[in-house]
Image 1 (spheres, rainbow, N blue to C red):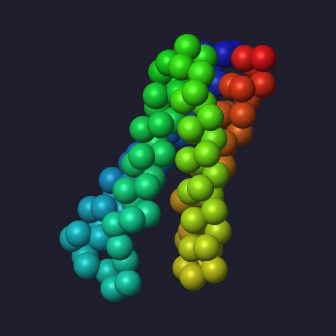
Image 2: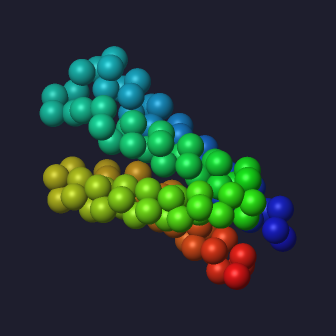
Length: 111
């Protein structure tokens, strides 16, 4: 069971990473008006933090706290984007919300 949960957690982090890469590529290729690279770059950093957390587990205790903070900041950014872009921003926030749950579960199971 633990192996399946780690696989899902890693898959979510890779989905966030792929969304960041695709956001950068579409921004640079199609030059969509009023689109900037700030959000896809933030998704990349959050995905990297989550991948470090998945790989190191509870051996790196402070990375879990950084993951929770990074995930919450991206969810707040997506809430603002939801006001501007509508439901499209919710698609980007779903894997991040799930990663918050996995980060908090790691803290709870560690104690």
